[in-house]
Length: 150
Image (tube, rainbow, N blue to C red; front, top):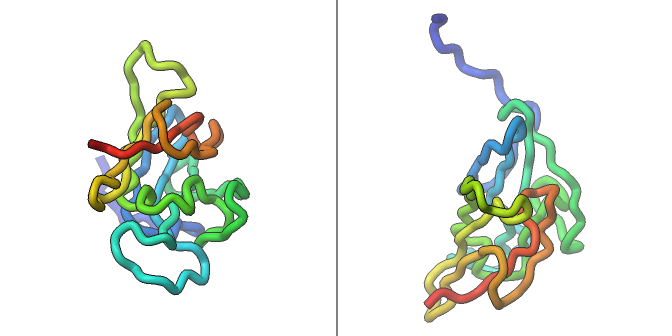
């Protein structure tokens, strides 16, 4: 076995916070928090400038940023946003892959998200009330709804 060597810098790395990378077959999917370009409001937990961005890679080193144009706003890498304008749900966005054998293909990706704000803690899951978000199969999410936790 050879000695570990540092990897060269990625030619296009994502710019954000609290990234989660999920291997989905041969594809790596990264979900991370960014801010709306030009946001100048407060930077407290769950603020309205927070967005959830998406990137993908075939090797975990070279990242691409699909321009999804779901919200008409831009983040650090363009329009690769999968969640915006739903404060506080971009805060602590924690996606995971449900690998149970009985899970439908369009419901494999799930996430928990939000902060505790007087009952506005949150969760994302297939189905449920609250705001329905336009996640797509291209990003791993489809038919996701947000609801308050109790």
